[in-house]
Length: 349
Image (cartoon, rainbow, N blue to C red; front, side, top):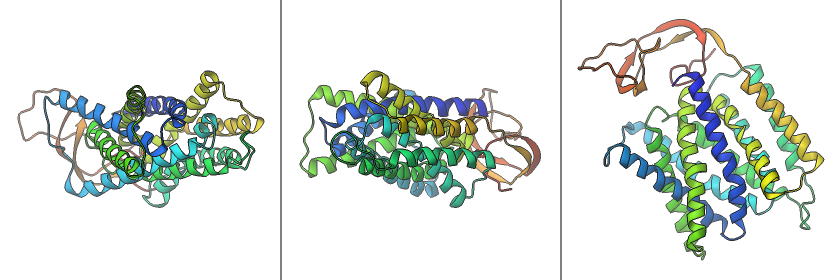
């Protein structure tokens, strides 16, 4: 994917995920948090695996190398099991609008892990944008009376915990982002959905009425399934920190839907936090990164076209159709152009 298409994929993922938060909030009172998390992910898993079976005309073995499976399993545990559970708990103690804006913390924590743990490059504009988003998140997390006789701090901390889980998930998923996005998102949905559903039933929860089950699974397919598949494509083309930065538009979409559709009240603190986070997102969206860099030798397989990073020949008959996928090797290359830390630009400065 090009940088532009990767950005569009991240924004589309943000739109779908942001819209899902207010809808999930509406179901929290009727369904236990663990049960709801299970239904959301189960809907995404069943839906995406159905798409994959139709696309491949039956079951096709995944092309995931053996050494990438631990990354995928870690992503499923953190982002597919713990993350949605904490979000559903958070939604029971805070408003959908506040929770939606708090989800901006995911981008911050994703970037911090990408820079500190996975050594992804960063520049001052991205760091400054993250600082604005953190300031807005701290405002929302500050103890406030929520109109129900208790503080909303617990809800904010639970949402922040979900963001940390998804930040770990994002960085681990980036490690496997060159593989089939539908397989990655669908498998995560199935495993996380079955795990949360089994845990909910073991703790005594019961399945809601079928109309509610259908609603939850439909929201999950769009907001957790299709959104995740698009985000995997964005990770492939932008890297963890920058994909997270574009994805941080999701909370504003969710907050707007909660305010307009659900009629939730807002406060001066809410609007100040929104302004700070908006500045941070704008700094991310207007970033431009260019310098001379060296590509190290690399061998992998993914869908590609024969651009300046793919100048290889084929050792098999090729019909000239692009994009296509096959194992290929990148030779050392030194050049300069605007780029993101995608699967071909994982260098340091």
